[in-house]
Image 1 (spheres, helix red, strand yellow):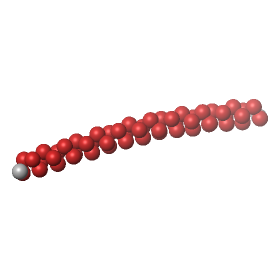
Image 2 (cartoon, rainbow, N blue to C red):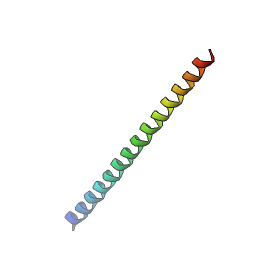
Image 3 (cartoon, one colour):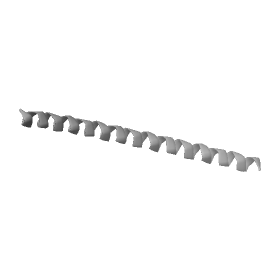
Image 4 (cartoon, rainbow, N blue to C red):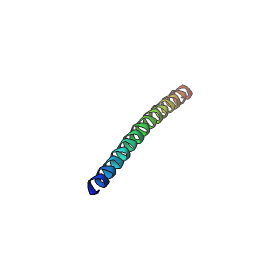
Length: 53
């Protein structure tokens, strides 16, 4: 019985790790996209400012 409980607990931890890895990958993707958006916005703003000078 104890082995079964430990096995179930281990499986639950494995599932939790998979979920956390998936969330990490999603967050990395979102941050990468947001970083690209910010860089593009700053670049566009720089061009606009240079044109005004």
